[in-house]
Amino acid sequence: MIQEYQLRLLPEQAANEQSIIRYIAHEKGLDVRTIKAVRTLKRGIDARQRTIYINLGVRVFINEMPPRDIFPPIRYPMVEGKPKVIVVGAGPGGLFAALRLIELGLCPIVVERGKDVHTRRRDIALISREHKVDPESNYSFGEGGAGTYSDGKLFTRSKKRGNAEKILRVFCQHGASPSILSDVHPHIGTDKLPIVIENMRKTIISSGGEVHFETCMEALIIRQEHVVGIVTRQGQELEGPVILATGHSARDVFRWLAGHGVKLEAKGLAVGVRLEHPAQLIDRIRYHNPHGRGKYLPAAEYSFVTQVDGRGVYSFCMCPGGFVVPAATGPEQVVVNGMSPSNRGGHWSNSGMVVEIHPEDVMAEKLVSEKINPDDPLVMMHFQEKLERECWLAGGMRQTAPAQRMTDFTRQKLSFDLPDTSYSPGVVSAPLHFCMPQFITNRLMRGFKQFDRVSHGFLTQEALMIGMETRTSSPVRIVRDRETLQHTTLSGLFPCGEGAGYAGGIVSAAIDGERCAEAVAQRMGIRIEENPQNNKS
Image 1 (cartoon, rainbow, N blue to C red):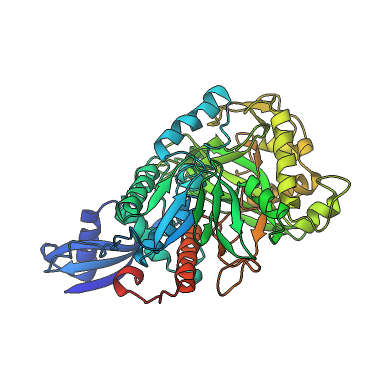
Image 2 (tube, one colour):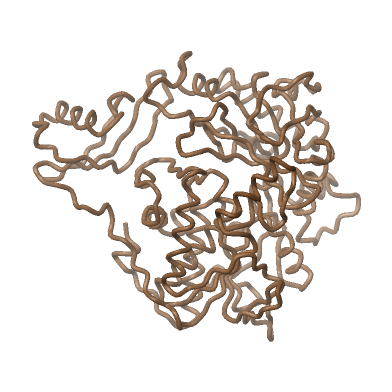
């Protein structure tokens, strides 16, 4: 017999499967010996009150054993010799597009400007150690894209766009922990995600697809307003429909598209800082306990959002027990991001603290220059570049980042000294309240005070602001048709994922990658059938 229950347990009661079984047996009047297994369907933490509870949805197997497989694996057929589709970029959008193309009987040719996930790790280490940024291999460019080294968070609100559960199952099939299927805020971890990404690449290649690293797209091949392939930087021509999944930092691609009359739109984004607290302080605040999280709770998370003068101010990409990293993709840039290992066991917790900005805000405040072309689709990109260069100058023209104590920022005073930080290239005291545009700083100050009223102690001199967080999303949208997902004026081009302006994280980019793959298949006359094994929960 199989029963499903919704449980509300204390953290120590939910610590492991055996304690959950004992609780169920006691509460439901069952003989504990008859409970053969418990599978968690959903797990979340309720920290709204002083007593912390774990909410569990469980499936209980009574007098019978559970099936061996948590879910049936997705089958990837051999596609060598099948029609080819060019996938530009090996981030989540590109990888999931490639895997879905294989499911549909098409052969993906993946071109990635960066290096494989393991070689890329060495280049990333040089950013902190020698302050050298490889413009083709960094925290944004390389196998797995920006998501590989930015925490592996898998929470999304984009479920209406596609099957988010299938995306999680694909991750599990390639080595991720099955816990991501049940966690309310699933997370793989920066230390675990690279092997998962590598396994996805192996699936693509073993199925007859191709993956080419250090192969940058130089141009699209356009014939009579129809994209028929790409030219690589090495001069190689690859023909086929193009799924363009280059990520939010491929500025050379945006410049090429704008320079060749490909329709783009400036898109709103969010800009601010990376805010770092001691992890124990966040644990004490969020769990309402002066002793912190204790033995049975994970590093605490938070999520804040408010409105200040008609614009959102909010936390972004919160990394409990994580660290702040240098995320520049070129010279004369300082950009910061955050990540966490799978155990979230670090001494600090950080998040982006950002202000919503629209193109009209940049133009009205003249935040780029005195002469702004209102029709320039790259105006938000220029704004990002300006802020990142100013950060580089303020940090001493290295990857050293300008920083300021949180309380000093709200008082508009320079920090005399700075607390310890996880940001390995180092920080230098700088007046961020002066370095950033007033449009941003005034809203951040008021937002911080509002967040402190909700979680007393959040606004503290122990917290460090590190500048700047500018890569929250793409600064452009590559315009596409809502139904066919092709570019509105160039057939054969399928703008995809976060870089194209249609996603905001790993799962939503993966969903969009699958949708683009299906759109390509439909254009090529392949009927998309709902496969219960592959596509349904």
